[in-house]
View (cartoon, one colour):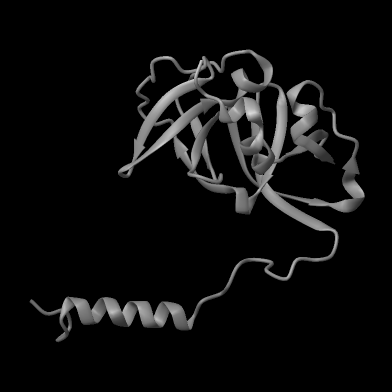
Length: 178
C-alpha cells in the first residue's frame, strides 16, 4: 500500500524529519532570572508545587492491587504500561488523614532512586510559575515542615515548594512494610 506514491514507513520518516526541523524547543527555555516553574497540585487544603524534573507524569487514578502487610498509606501497586509502581496516599502519609477518592482522581508519578512511585493528589492545577519577589515563609508544620523549605504567594494562595526527592529519602516513606 502506498500513500501519495510513498510507502507508509517512508511517510513517517518524512513527518519525523520535518517535525524535528521545526522543533520549537521548550517554552521559556531561557528562564528570566528569579523565575521558577513547576507542577501545581493540592493535597488536602494545601497548595503545593514540585519541580518539573521530579514529576515523571500525571495520570488518572490507576487500578490498585493492595499489598498485604503494607503501611495504611501504601494503597498498593498498579500496573502502568507494564511497569509495577507503588501507589501512595500522600495525604495519609503526611497528615494521617485518608484522601477521599473521587471521579477524576489523579496521581503524580514521581522520580525516585530505585524506581518511580505514584502519589495520590486531591487536585491538579498544572504548570505554575513564580517570581522570587513573591517568596514568603512556608506555612508548614509536621511532616510538611521537613519537605517544604520555601513558598510563594500567588493569586491569594501560598504555594509550598514540595521536595519530592527529599520525600523519597525520608526513612518513614522508604519503609512501606507495616
